[in-house]
Image (cartoon, rainbow, N blue to C red; front, side, top):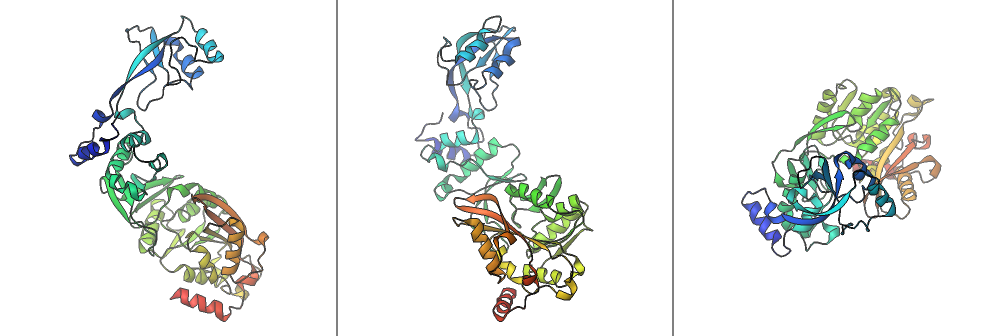
Length: 423
């Protein structure tokens, strides 16, 4: 195993020289206890003693017999077994061992361990011995063949090392990037830096049978939301008309058209999202049911809701940092004569909350955004989707647009706010 004092420096030199094999830094010989068993009983032992079996990456626990006896094999035990007298096994485990014929014996065996046997986290733990365990990278966002890391500042000096290990341990990944800024720009695209692999940013993603293609530098995509994409679309009724006001490259719009046969009016302010949306609709053969727009979300919603002719029954707002703010376009947006006797749309508004009482917080913010403080808790269903950070939740507020909001006379304050938003 690499030495604590020189490993990071030594590996840095190897990386600079273009080397990809780190075996010299990781190779070691480990003494373990092995069970010498009949070949026909290997499965009985590995299943019955599964919590004792040695698990090494790319290394099977069942090995040929060291003396070449083809009728027998050895099964490697993990570090919980240190002696050959079987006393460290439980009574039930000894019963399994003693029930095998011909008899099982415990022997000492040497296992050669190399870089190939280390998981990503194990390798980084060895390479960065001075880094606290909680800071060792163990997860990452994977978008097609691109791995996206969000490294702590103190690990930036090791980013190329970390990227190379991630690349080595995940065969499906060809490109590793690190986030270099926040989602603060108009289109919520990520600033990123290549830290390992090849600069190939055009990706293909398959999510629940729907195929998407886009450049990760141009648009926002979160693979952790695939379950939510599927869940929300599952609530749509066959053939409904959906208005997706912040559609991205189409993770709600395309499956709604493909799976539920919905007509989807899909809008995004980012022109790249608009382009990829149309391409993805065509790729999945639903281009006739996905109508694309490249405009402001408020303007998009107001135009579609002004008349009931569009038949909109769902409005989706998935820009969690701003979605609740966009709800100020709903008061007075509906023509009462046109919508008379018809069901007003149901809104699904995604948002964040850091409140100790997130559901109450979201309900109050939704009501305030629509200038309708008398909205009751029963009128707004708030569902927790996932944690995004400590004390920060990602939620979805779903509600039917109340007639008193839809047909409200927009007061001067609300009108002024809408004007400023449009500008």
